[in-house]
Length: 316
Image (tube, rainbow, N blue to C red):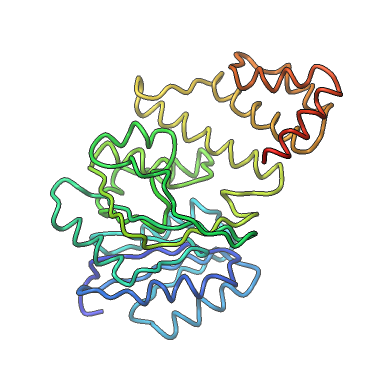
């Protein structure tokens, strides 16, 4: 490139050989009046993802920068490496199993940020796609996250899917990725959005520009019980971190964290029809609330437990 790109687009991928080409093609199809670069973080996949990424980089060497991890780094470290490689004033992103469906997505977001003072973050609308059922629908659960009061929402979770957002790179000065790694966060977007919301206004473009695949077995939707627990442990680590950063604005004590994780494990026990484990967990709450008490009730005896298991399975 003759000059620095205005936008850096980060694509994180690991073992996504069936979707990564569509992701990259959807980014390359963008129609813009500015230059952009694509930073792909390939986290040592064991399928054909790496060779696909290399092929695209060789075809578009002036557009794509490829970070090939020598060993699997995990989501946060791979993501951090990509963020540090960005040169653009703005950063957009996509997971390796999501894709963009509006060729003007990037142009719309840059125009918004350029023309709205005080806004350093903007997201678009989009669809979810359930891989198992091929069901698609509009994502609506983030729609209240606008303006300068976003922290009240962001302190509990991300305010937009990764592929829908674009933000000012300067906001990364408030992010300590080394601390994210040290605390073993299971997600990068949640803490980033919460911290960003303290320093900028959040915008929203209603156009449906992206598709978010809901993939069973992914980091955010694990199948294995131990991986589910690890994911929620990382979520709790984020809450504790944010409570330390913003005392008085978010409460997450060690007792809260303990009961949250016991609650999740107890739910897993119902899913696995494991009465012995459920009985053991039911006695470990420090301050059970209404939801916890309801589950505890169903562990009083074996019959009640299996009725609870069947009810939860049917409801799910």
